[in-house]
Image (tube, rainbow, N blue to C red; front, side):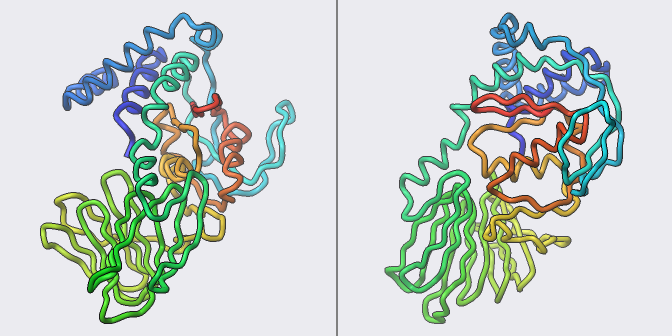
Length: 337
């Protein structure tokens, strides 16, 4: 889920590009009127834009137009030939999107986002890791063995605590994602609580992941029962996945693609025809800087490929090397436009 602050920024960039239509302006007004939070996000973005319009970076970048290249809307990671007039390095990808003139106020966007990043980067996760029994930092994964013999594989920026003192083995996942290879003990069910729900197993392999206000449960082996506080539940078998939100019934994912699930344990991220927006959301989990896509058209690019988690900058670099998209990098921020 894209934060309201990011959405407000994207709206302002679009409206100031010079290409915004009357329909887009009306859509913006409708978006802003959805709630007080939406209106507040717009006011904060407008104030920040006004404060940085006269910066040197803004003066250097404001009003620049960029032609975006045409090609197939798929990133199919293989070598691509480019015009001889453009210097390039061999890449393993191909991306493109429809051509459109785009005047981007990059300097204003970068300066504005830099001001809000420190307050938005993983505040809850930092608190969760501070209070957790086990945790990982950004870009780091680890494997530990719990007192009962269960093996826990922690993904990036994850944190959980345990309570094995009673008749059940309870894990409280506070942040991130963990795959549990549960030690069999029929007399002591293994329960992972996260947000408004829980998942229970006796001996199995399954992962639990927090994504904003959603929790995903994916079963690799055995059977897991997923429930929430309302009493609703769903039983998952091996190869199945479900999500739940606060107060909502857990829902089975009918078309779950689990071929690459847990690939981060091998230091890889695998994407199969995924929108670039989703890919960047996943990459963000492994990067300390904030990554923002400034154009909706870029979010819809389809991505298929395998990336090393330790070399995710190559994915970002491929945007510039195989399309007309541009990247602006600051110490705490990367903008794709």
